[in-house]
Image 1: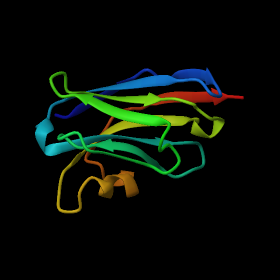
Image 2: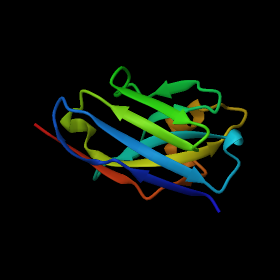
Image 3: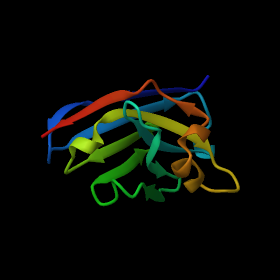
Length: 128
């Protein structure tokens, strides 16, 4: 059974940084991309960043240039380095895994609800 466990959330002032981690297990990691999506109260899910097993990455427009996704394949762990955080980044952040198919990893960035597995989330709060 797939299991994704996030850690590293918290509260920070605007302009600060946080690093999220995601430990993945229970599925064939080579067949799945890993990513992050977020959801703020009253808003729909938003794809944040995705990383392919081969290292290719894509980002949502609102975080491009500020967030960096990476992975340690040996540890089956993904990371999200978030720099220059803004109050509008405040949300619950979820790690998720999606099977790589015909439409590529962008499929999950556009529609995070399509991920096959996701964790319970970690809260990120950015204050002025």
